[in-house]
Image 1 (cartoon, rainbow, N blue to C red):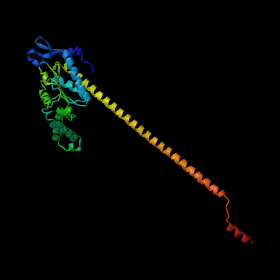
Image 2: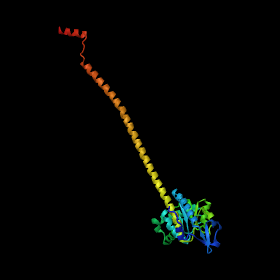
Image 3: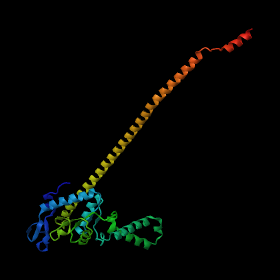
Image 4: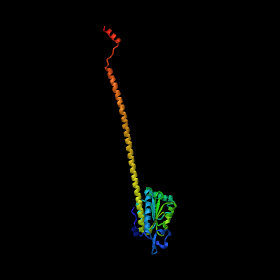
Length: 306
């Protein structure tokens, strides 16, 4: 993953914080200075935190797990939706449905309801409903799509969440902390970085700053997914090679076994042929021997002559 540069963050306006009177004292380690009543964020620490968060996200994506992106702010919702879609990660850019993590089973029921409505609308029986009923069903489907369409593929709790502005998304952060789900967040000078596991100090109001940080996170996720795919292909290739080697070894053992059987059969055949030859020779020798006449048979023959 390409390292974030100081100039990129500076051009995006990531160094601008909130007014001094709105600051959170826990953000003091990440504040560089105060100028004209506005806090300036230390971008070198921002770079270090981006790299740390990106490495963690890469490992999560490499293990095949899901990361939920949460950004309901007007400046962030479109950016997050467009950036996250290509990597097939779930995201929430409309109102956060309360209990989405702590009461996940109920949310899944709503998603299944949306699936059932889709099946109903594609069936022939949908045309038998009255116009008013069809309109009511289509409106309900649109409402569910708006709220839950982006998390329809989320079959289990996410392994991590990424939040833009933890003050606005405090319910999502609280639910994740309750379930011990790792939290990544873009935190400004008016936020408490101790509420999240991987805080990224940067301007969470500027669209360029949000786009830059979210883009880096998505790049890390894409790298993790790509590495997972390569490892999977490599493993499959190795398994194929092992199977081929096993097949070759088994065929070789069969050939050796056949050769051994043939080798054992040849001496037996030689022995049989020798016995046959010996029996033939004995038969021929018996035929060649002259017949011996006894004395009794010679006397009988003489009498017949007389």
